[in-house]
Image 1 (tube, rainbow, N blue to C red):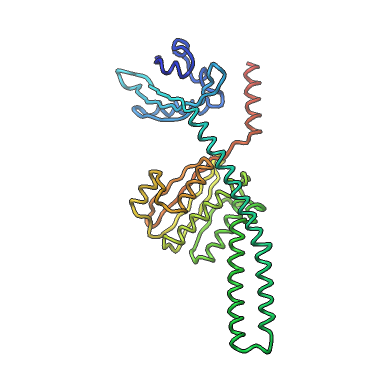
Image 2: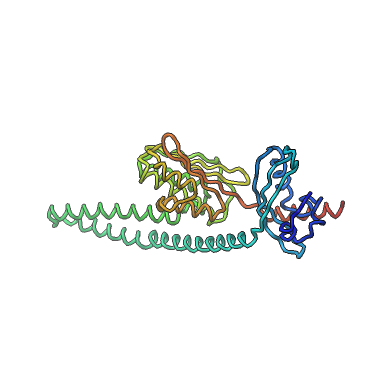
Length: 337
């Protein structure tokens, strides 16, 4: 019905060519289904404002990204319309994508280094420890040793076995073999079982019976690390005797929940975290939030009675081959009509 000069400038068209036009005339084709769902939601809620993002094909051929806020004022007798305002966030989105791409590359390098260290611990350090224990065992078997010397060697053997066990655990956590070979669900189920044995905390794991569709290696490792950091936090700080890890695959997204029944977080810390401030939250929560952002997910921390709950929602990327096929079919149908 009306377009002000700023809207005309941002959309790159004179107002007379915008008035009376709809989403089909302005938005890129891929955004149309979501746009129609958005407008339908706006129309169902008088007086409410909703915000989304859309991509617009500019007359100069470029694609611009807009933040779009729509308010339903249809029932207002003085207005009787849906009033929208929007701003161009293309540069902001490009900067975010550049940062995300850089973070992804950095994460891949970090994971490669973790794998290298894990292999070194397993293939080299563990072998030297084994050789040390064999030598100590041979010395301990010498009949000429005094009782005191034999006792000290026995202590040294016990310490060596403990170190070997710690190294095996560290090697596994740095480079979990089940993650690469059998997938995320199998690796998480295996890790949760081992964590429960090491920590004494009863942890219940619930996930799909079969593994979910394989994600990119850095994404699977990021999710594995989030569970690892969350359970470590529970062990160190919550005083909880039990915990639960739940993972659900909704087709277009993955939801991860980690709950405990401990003493909970101080209310001021919890409120700060819920507002997105993780500065005073410690390394664990900061790491979880960083990995969530790298996967374009959302992190919610809620108070439970008793305990604390973490919920992470991660969007799954659409199969590009299927998307290309759908676009080709849409073009063919459009040409046929």
